[in-house]
Image (cartoon, rainbow, N blue to C red; front, side):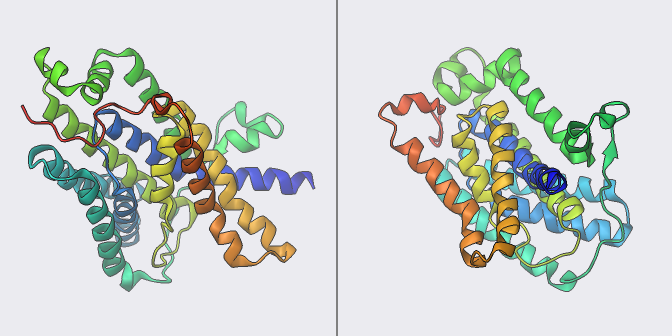
Length: 304
């Protein structure tokens, strides 16, 4: 029984890592005032780029780099359209999501059912990995898990305590006042959008390089939409996002734990997305919407 619990928690952390990476990136983007609903598309593009390059080269680092580049490039398109062209951010994000999913499906079609020759192996942290139970759960994971934890803490510190981070937050709250202080609003927004997209691409890479190393169509399976919900759930705080990511990772794993008990598979497949809707509903029912701490200028185009 203890072994089953440890195994379930271990898989929970693995499932939550991609959500953590994507949520951290989306928080960075939205803190600057840009709403990007294209996370699903960027994660799919990161996944297919990471898989294709790793499959062809057998080099995991090249695969991770390709995923970062694919996610960042897709986000740059969204950033250009919304920041410089001043297009509607919701429409642009939805279009990016559909474009990314479709393009990933076309590019990945020749690889359906293929297995990667290598995968991200779990690394044991010396000494810490020897701690009973806790060591196996937290200090015996793949490199992207450790990177995700570091990025979440670094993003929290960066946005809260550094001069540049405070400027990013001010751009998301009041871009006109920020520009009056000499802050280049458009530049900050564009760079944060690209950075958030790179994080989403990295999240897609984790899905194919660590969590599931064979390509199937729709491999991201809606995780990008859960990331959007987790960004609200976290109140735009990377540390809360980390908690939410592993919580939803547990919901993902629950469907595999309950399936042998006779629970209908279709009902289990609904769990992560149903939980996302519940989170959004609870946030929407709050009487004081300002308690959400959403950036005041989120989703609003800015012109000088």
